[in-house]
Image (cartoon, rainbow, N blue to C red):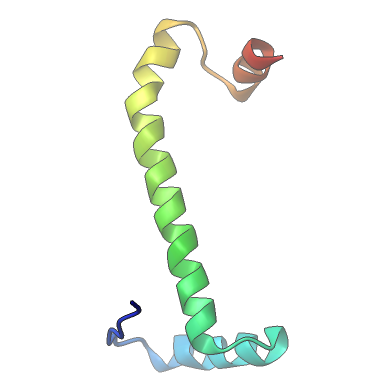
Length: 72
């Protein structure tokens, strides 16, 4: 079930959201939900990265190129 929440945002952001809403032809609420989903996904990724990074470093995996070499 979806629940409503109330947030306060600066008028400038509200104006930009309305403009993007018109351009994208999507309701502002859809844009906000999509943005929150992306924020949560990035947060989860960073959290997992911080957990796995010490293990990767111990194996000598320090760069993206190292990862690609390992999985190729």
